Length: 158
Image (cartoon, helix red, strand yellow):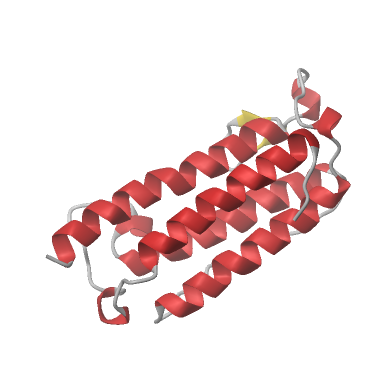
């Protein structure tokens, strides 16, 4: 894709984070997707690789929908889906890239940074973000879970 400007740069970095993440998960055997990898955690999104991946896809759509709704739309985040194969998650991440790119077709570079709270997004966790900050959060969200899964793989696939 020939993306331009600040919006293009954000989308390029977001897409690269997802592509790098996909390389980390592509060799995970389907047989360990549902295995409880952190029995101590109270975070239901981090009990298994399956729950982490479903959380990540769902969050990715959530970020895009927050941005989409900032333009006056009233979309709701889709329900979380739990797959039994890595292939299905890889497809989900591809669809997420396309969906996010489509949301950004209506976003201008000048809309990315907002100083006034009235033009920012209030998330479900009560954080206030402009579009750029939310996308930066989305990118770091991928990186954090990539780190988490890399550690899990070292322990599970030894």
